[in-house]
Image 1 (cartoon, rainbow over the protein chains, first blue to last red):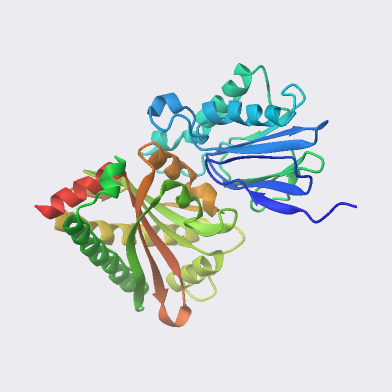
Image 2: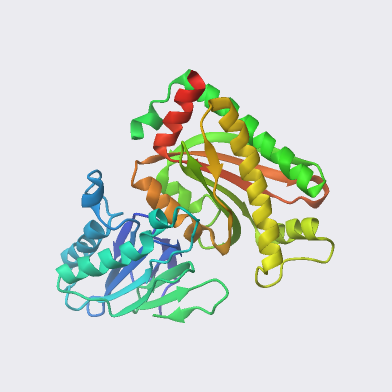
Length: 165
Length: 204
């Protein structure tokens, strides 16, 4: 019999990996951020990265931070591999990258969501990987959950029923 | 950039705190005039925080809020936001549009316009005082009214600021309208560079 599940929030700019079967990883309130969920169905372990910005090389500081897509994606895969996962078995799912906020005159600066989507996909492609499912873009915020017992992934948008990804 | 927030000169910070408190109180006065009821600003404070903490500045990041946002342009850059629970937003709309005019399931154009006006007024009254005190040009952009998850609304602002440094200066306060208990959180988020500019101008 399965024990009680424990919700583990994965905050902005954080990365979390686990083999604990009763954990549910949650990225709450994703706007322009992109959550990357990864699950190895054979080893039953998984992780999530909450990406905030696209490219650490654009900024030139804090280059090792997992808040950047180009750092977070390879780090997530690397950490899961170090626990025994195979990157080719991973179910990779993405959510977020919306443009929730639109302010006249500042739109260009606020268009981070699109750039995050492109950067996450590029970082996966650089590893020879692609997402199995995506819920990206648009103008609404999302909350994404990854259930460790079985790799089930859900996305919730305010005013809509939670859906499987 | 980070050093401009972590190594603030004590006198400069004091001048900034005083100017911001006055600006925030002025925005409460503006709001009082608009709704024709006494509105008090409680617990106005200026703080330096890690940028990542902005994600929960409106409360739990996955919970629905109504936010009125304005950009700040001119000599400085930043954002002003008023965040309300959906219940408080409905009360505010009723105060502005009349009894029985609550907030429907969706934000209709009338409610959106009324809340936008509140943001316009709060932002203008706030920036006028700060601009007068510093001699810097500060203009609010037209307001945007959004109903969504609190964390999602602030994500893009957080990303912009996190590209500049690890710390952010926040101005927070709560408006209370006595008998209706309409609580709204006021947030002012200047860019790192703008904080230095305002302190420099206030110190002259």
